[in-house]
Amino acid sequence: MASVATVILAAGKGTRMKSDLPKVLHPLNDKPMVHYVIDAAQAIGSEKVVLIIGHKKELVEEATADLSVEYAVQSPQLGTGHAVLQSAPNLENFEGNVLVLSGDVPLLQAETLKNLVDYHRESGAIATLLTTEMTDPTGYGRVIRNPEGDVTQIVEEKDASDEIRAIKEINVGIYVFRAKELFATLPEVKNDNRQGEYYLPDVLKIYVQRGEKLAARLTRDVEETHGINTVDQLKNAEAILNQRLQNPVSG
Image (cartoon, rainbow, N blue to C red):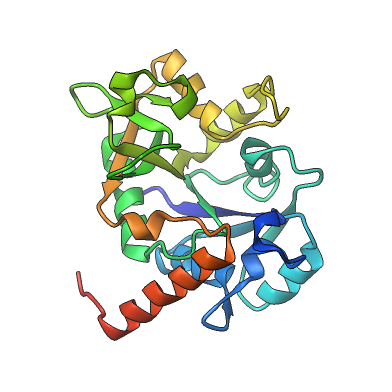
């Protein structure tokens, strides 16, 4: 069975948190939010956990020093595709699958990640994305599947027709890739967008153009996929965590 390594994106500043603290270090129940992401990655048996750091990287290193993680520095910060590429030296001889997580999505549960990785292995896909369904998916990239259930396209809101906008299934930005193919393809990603950045989902577009198989695994728990960008969202995440502690669900 192919092993798994996890790359966690943790380089951002988090301007909307109105604080100079790196976003991933904002505390959730007195624990930096990135700790929850690292815990989940380790709970599924990740062979390596690589943290991509940037803004105030020394603080992030200090806060995670005792958690058995490796680091890769993204400077300057040129998008999610560029971020993952920085982990290539850490995973140079790694033959398995790479799970890509965000350090600001702390509610994702290990069981969901295990299901995603298992599904990826079973599907034979070159990459598998985590998706969820939202009552109001406005603003999110919609997932288009073929009759077999494989992903043929992810269409951003701005590019979507009315028919596509009616789709409720969205891409949440959590992926599993075959390591060798991922690092071979990342240098092909272009930055011809308004931000001049290299985006990780563009790897999926390249795979689709090549006719590669892309899979998607749906989680019904929308809340666990939410990223934290504001103080209000942080408070909401704390409430969800506390609820989980009071009502642990098995299986």
